[in-house]
Image (tube, rainbow, N blue to C red; front, side):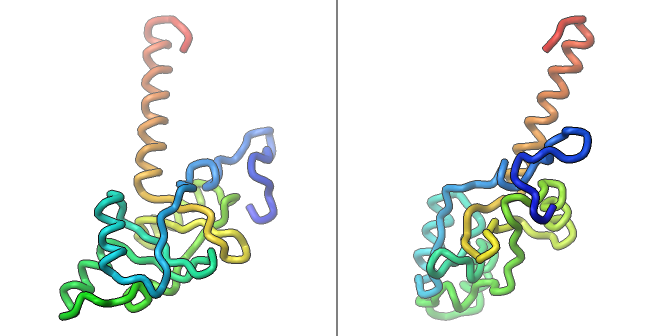
Amino acid sequence: MEGRVKGEPVEGGIRVITVGDFMTRDLVTVREDDDLALADSILRLGGIRHLPVVQEGRITGLVTQRDLLRSAAQRSHKTTRAADIMVREVVTVRPDTSLVQAAKIMLANKFGCLPVAEEDGKLVGIITESDFVRFAADMVQDLDMVAEAVSTGTRA
């Protein structure tokens, strides 16, 4: 997939579905020096489980709901910064990464999300398990419509 332009057809004229087609672009992020109380509020109020940590637009870490729970159980004070608990070795994908490749990375590593970054590290999106479930539901719904059309002799 390296070097492929989004939407460029592959052999046989079939376009590969990319991470960029499904990623969430409207991101909520924190900075390394933000207090964990802020991160906790953002996660709860936003109904999200993954919070990218950025400095100057580039991803430097990831704070998850699980990280916050673990931190609260291990620390006696509540004034901890995001940098103190964030995962620093974050695996990212690029927008032109195939959706299949992203899914395989997530499954192999048991990741709940993959931040999407440009080559220079600039964060441009995130793809989560929820995005894949939504995609699967849409595909199953389409298959059901086709099966119904075939069984009734009509076209979808």
